Each structure stands twice: as structure tokens, then as C-alpha cells.
Image: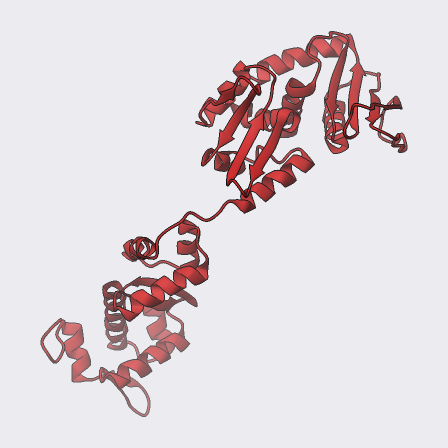
Length: 344
């Protein structure tokens, strides 16, 4: 078994004829899905028979070359059809028995629930959404309540909502993201396209400026990047940067560059990190003379060490001689845990 074959089982459960014992049939309006089904059944079927393809069009026949491995392709006009649809048929009584037995065993195996459901949706599902009414729905229409579909929905922890009048299951709200995360609506090309449009139309969760500020501030107990905050709160990086900038003006947040990346944290956390880094450099300086050797001690490249020492010189913690750097008395007091005001 593989994912594509179990998707085909879902397609057949949705739009196959499970009553006949003489042939495998599958009906769909997507030629891509017909060929997908044909390709995967052909890998499983080892008999000598070749499948037949029937094409029904609303007003004109669509001709294409029979280079697809079918025994025959026949074209018909169906005035009732809104668009062309296709019927796949493979006649082999022995294979039908094998196929139905395979389906019965596979459809109750939790390993394959999601891939089978994606096939069922490709056959019986549809997308309905309205930007005007802020309505977004995923629908699966088996015609009547279906125990297998309900087992799959329960497996995904999606509430069972069945509309008896319209004879379909409805998935709404946050449960749509469960279908999105599991790629359940992507198998059918057109339905997948509609689903992606619906997902893009979902508005960002609304946060008041004050509440977003509160959420961001709560994340600054550790070092975080702007893009991670933007992803977590479903906001643009620019919007998150505006909040961080305001917190910085209020001396509640600050940023620092580590290994070429910018990280934000609370003002207190940044100050403690910088102080710890200064002490580490000064301690390394006491037993090392070159930028390279200092860098090896504190896992920092030599250029960064040089920049740090220049800053420490401005602050009066180190002094540069003709050949090397050395600590000042202020630097020694900092290592000892005391600054000139006796605070550390």
C-alpha cells in the first residue's frame, strides 16, 4: 500500500460502483484524476484486460489520442451535463473481488484515514465561501450519512455536522485549518485551487493594538526573532516591528545581533546578556593575548572579539598597548562583580 493507492480507494468509495462484481468503475469530471486512478490501478492490476474510457460532453465531443493505455475511448454527448465528465471501466471479475477485499481492509486502518478522506473529498467534496458574508465551508456530499466518513472526521477531531436536507457534511471555522494541515482538499485540481483561494481569503485574527502589545511583551522573556513573532500571531513582520519599536522607546525591550541575526528580548534580559558577554571577554583576556585565542575561549570570531574590545576600551574596562590589550582596574572590578558605584 502507498498513499496514492489509498487515495484511489477514497476516490472509488466516493464515485465508484461498489454494487457490480464484474468491473471496477470510477466517474469524475477531472481527466487528471481519471488518469491518476488509471495509473495507480495499472500498477496493482496484473491481468491482461485493458480499461475502457467513456467521455461525456455537454455540447461537443472532445477528441484526444488513445495513447493512454485504454482498450478504447468512446465519446458521447450529454445535454444535461454542465461540463465534460469521464467514466473509467476495467472488467475483470477476479480483480474486482481482490479490489473490494483490499478496500474493506484498508478503509478501517487508521494509518490510511487521511489519504482515503482526501480521495473521498476529491470525489464528493466541494468548497463554498463568500467574502461578502464572511462564510467559509468545506462540504462532503455522500447523499446520506456515512459511517466511514464520520470515523475519519472523529479521527481528526473535527465535529460531525451533517445537514440532512442538503445531505452533506459541513466543516467550518478553525476546523478548516485541520483539513489544510493534512492536505485533504488538494487532490482534485479545481477543488484544490478553490480551497487555496478560500484559505488566502481568511482574514487575520483581530488583535487590538493594546492586546498585541501585551502578547509580544510576554514573549520577550527569551530571545526571539521578528519573523517568529509574526508567524505566531499571524501578523506581518512590519506590524510586529512597530510594536517592538514602541516597547523599545518605553525601555521595555531591546535587540541584539547574535551570529548575524537580530534577536529581541526584554531590556533586562539584553542588559544581563551584554554584561555576561563583557565579563566572558575580560576573563578570556586575562590568559590570552590574541583575538583568535580569545575567540576560541568564548566561541566568537576574531573580528567580533576586536569590535567588543574596542567598545570595552571606550567604557574604560580595557586598554590597548602597542602589542596587546590589558584590563584596567575598572575591568578587574567588573569581573569581581562590582562597578565604580558598587552595584553589581
